[in-house]
Length: 185
Image (cartoon, rainbow, N blue to C red; front, side, top):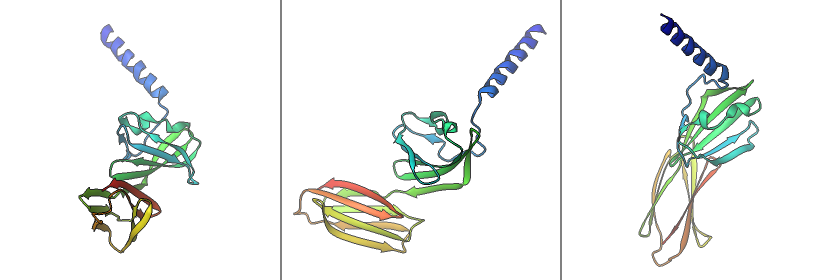
């Protein structure tokens, strides 16, 4: 009976200690909770000014990797730039408590570029855009531009001149974002 009482007391003290040091609470489990090493992160304040930008150095839970409760009270936007998608979420910090705003989740799908021989394949899902502009540059000189309106999915194949060997750049502009792909023929 004494051993059982001691074990219960030890468990109670340990749990009390953990609860006493907890400084962050999550009311809603965020979609950007699991991040991978190499993903890019940027945190901006309510005015849009970027206060942190960098590469994630560890796999794991975003809130255990970054200590958001040290920021001033307010609303912040967090962007996680993954391979083919940018995940955006907003957090509210009030009195050191971090709350993910569940109505602010957004995903932006980045374009996928593939080059085979002299053909360039571009695919992009744009649920939130009505217009996309595609531009091709050869040796930093604009050689082709194309504007796609009304389509939510871009699937295009562009054939380049096989005789023009050198450095090319393809850009896709949509929703005030520019995606760039450099390649050689």
